[in-house]
Length: 139
Length: 139
Length: 139
Length: 139
Picture 1 (cartoon, chains in turn blue, cyan, yellow, purple):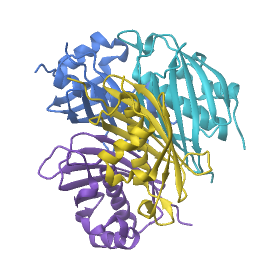
Picture 2 (cartoon, chains in turn blue, brown, yellow, red):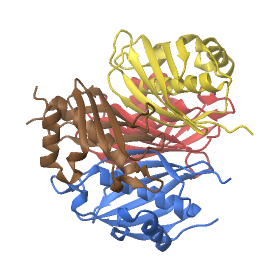
Picture 3 (cartoon, helix red, strand yellow):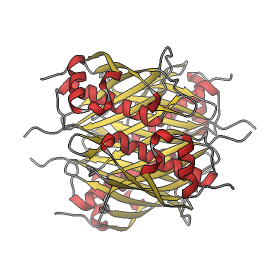
Picture 4 (cartoon, rainbow over the protein chains, first blue to last red):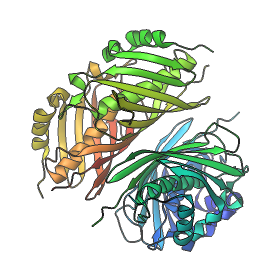
């Protein structure tokens, strides 16, 4: 099965989503259904109170699952999110965030995973999401 | 009870979230637990295939609920999203989107609503979300 | 396309899920992606305080979506729930409940709908759920 | 802070929810925001194909979170579920199920946790849920 490693994922982001500014992501590990990456929030991610915005946390959770799917299946660019459920648990600090994701299921049609976001230096999650992707059938 | 109308909501956005570029939003109606607004997607909202990105749809859904809460309670800037569940149903076209939201419950501690996004000229939703906000207790 | 009407849905329940005691359900309408049925809660559905239990509301929401799918596709007994998200909004009274469901999407692989439950005589929902079913591919 | 241990939780179930037949639950551990219990499914929990029904998995997930909340806060019988999101991942076998839950947040107003269900002898979850409870304020 074709798979993608950390360097290949970031390279794919540069080609497919340059507007996401992939230089802000640093993938530490991605293998065997687990992913762990750092994200450097900047002013565009903040909301009043110097906290990272909900939409940024949602985008990171979606991206974490995207990394998981591509790391397992290769560059299936047609994989799309079908649903996302997120709980916002604590106020994130500004600055670097840690994103940790885990596949719960990789089926033929659907992949399901959970993605947590942490503020730097804390082991209590800022948000917890479950995300479902639809996997295109080859034809 | 203090409430906010469409013009006041947009003005509040300009003050509190200028980076969201409030000039892209046009609130058509907001009253009695219902909101309806237009959003002009631009290049930063697109993903490959000229479709509006999932994170943009999630941000719009969250914003729709924010409008609902503020329209009913006034400028409770400390109201925060506690959870969001979204289903992505169809591929949105580029261009203008219509966002329609409805309060399901306005309790003392939690407000729950549903928010659908439509491509222009279509009556089948692109996404459907349920969103919960926590309402700060005055003290 | 084969479809099922109200009488056929109840008959199918009697054959496939007799333990659900289908005599407690009374389908008022099911057509064109909408369903509306009554459910008579009994002692086994109650929790302390004479309110209908959360698991009963979840089961009703799931069943509402099942009716929607079968009403559109015929007796695809292999259709299975892949996810369910429910918000509990108000305390239901004991007695009869009204369940109202609407399809949001009927795709080739996934069907998504929303299902609300009401206490008798109230137009404010007791619960609101979105439910996703996976549709088996014929082969 | 008052807390409840495994024996006290089962005893409380016998008093408050006798119709749930608490003799079918065997709590192995409950402490520090983690719970782990066994459940013996019987005929009333099965659906065609000898698989445990979705409503049973939802009820178990809700109960897992209830155990977590009560184990931390004591017998706050007024704690109620405000939302539940569940993904059904694999077909459960009939027979004994293992339920594993973990608190993600215990706030003053809301508690959020995740609950997974496993078939006996498998380490791949049958379902994964996130559950939110509202915690009554003492007054």
